[in-house]
Image 1 (spheres, rainbow, N blue to C red):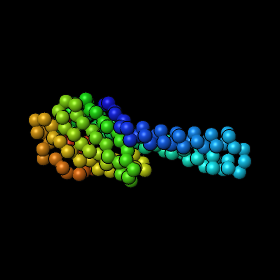
Image 2 (cartoon, rainbow, N blue to C red; image 1 turned 90 degrees about the vertical axis):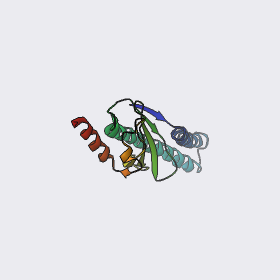
Image 3 (cartoon, rainbow, N blue to C red; image 1 turned 120 degrees about the horizontal axis):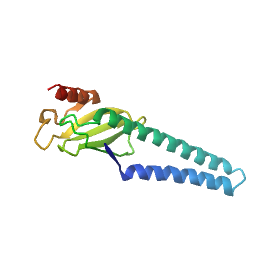
Image 4 (spheres, rainbow, N blue to C red; image 1 turned 180 degrees about the horizontal axis):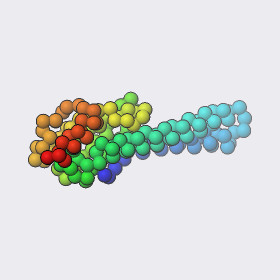
Length: 151
């Protein structure tokens, strides 16, 4: 499985690094009552950075858990696009590089845990057409993969 991290992720990481850097700069330059602002920025920036790393790791681990192989064709040639917005729920894409199937995954913006999965494009040979557009829990796709292996 390959991962692509979109620009929105990097923009957020850069923002919190700048916030922490500004806090450190204020602490270094001003040794007075303004230093409380520096501590707040530094601690907030570092806390947000750790939280972003936690969410990103969870999003990757969940994608690996549920899409280590394509539920439709069984290929392990999967591409996951990890992205973040400024909302409570984030959306990511999972694309099978062999059959062309594509899913949109909604995850919790607070934990990175998968909430729902929706097939938005069936395979190039129309396998999975019956699941197109249905929002399901991720376990549904694990069940589909198991059924495919049993055939």
